Length: 273
Image 1 (cartoon, rainbow, N blue to C red):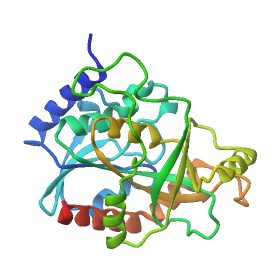
Image 2 (cartoon, rainbow, N blue to C red):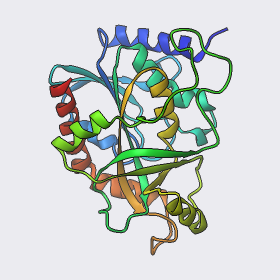
Image 3 (tube, helix red, strand yellow):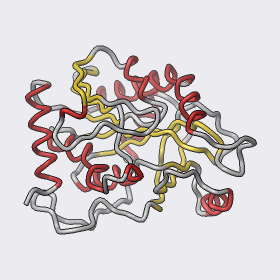
């Protein structure tokens, strides 16, 4: 029986052959970040659908490539989009990117997303760091048969899910606000009542991704940094109806800033190691 980890090993072998070797970091570009790839320098591109276990993302604003590039002395695998739980493929494909990255030799994952923001004092289109999360997707990537070694052990400590060390490095490169991200299943947007509840729980950001990726990444030993691009005020706070088109438009307007932030953060991580 093929496990998700067997499939990740197969995907990693494909990428190792395609891109000539192992990699040190993975960066996943979420909504509003796909255009940032142009700020990271020249790279070798591969359609994500060619890689075992990957499907081209169907979410708005997501790219469909795996890109190998170099930042300083680090080889970085960039995934220009991600699979979301709401796309209906199940949990394993959501976790496949970070599992593949770990099998490819990556030690660090920089996961980005676009999110609704509950903080009216934050600037729309200005990236922030994720300090912690609340998982309300109703799912975990660790549910099911116990995976084989070296991935055995599903009771993963998430106390430092978003690495304090990496956040300090990123903050030294680019001063940013930090907040708690609340992840929901989607694809529908939240109700104003849900946003009031989220605020009472301490959430600053809300979206439909990232939390399952982080759990899976920590399970396979990756150190995680989360970056979020506030693309809109959340339901009940925003004076206008929410729409995917607004998210895409804000992401395009903020692409240069998001790309510059991601570039400087990756350079800072590479410098420290």
